[in-house]
Every structure is written in structure tokens, then in C-alpha cells.
Image (cartoon, rainbow, N blue to C red; front, side):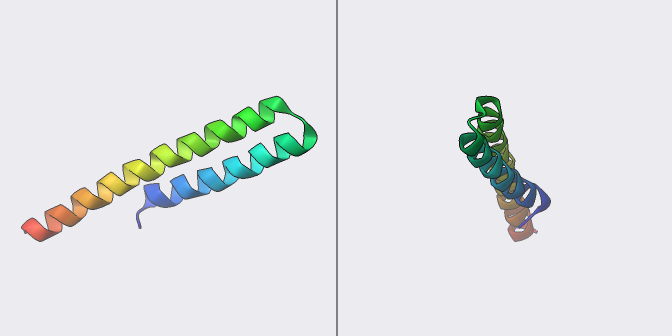
Length: 62
């Protein structure tokens, strides 16, 4: 697991927390902010996945 994957998972957890807090407090902007954080986290994690796969391929080639 690389740094981008960890950051992505952390952003997803943070976003889920914000989203739930927004629902609990009826704060629609906080809920939307949480959804954006989750989406950003998924993108970071996906980038990390691709980066790791490329790194594994490079290791096999050498």
C-alpha cells in the first residue's frame, strides 16, 4: 500500500464522517462537503492503485 492509497482511504473516512455529521445536524453544506471528500479520496486511492500496479510491473521487467 502506497502513500496515495492511504491518503485516499483517510479522505474517504473523513468524508463519511462529515457527511453523517451533516445529516445529523441537518447541515446540507457539510453533507455535500463530505460527499466531495469521499469522491476525492476515491480518486486518490485509484491513482495510488495505478501507481502501485505500474511499480509492480517495473519490478517484474527488471
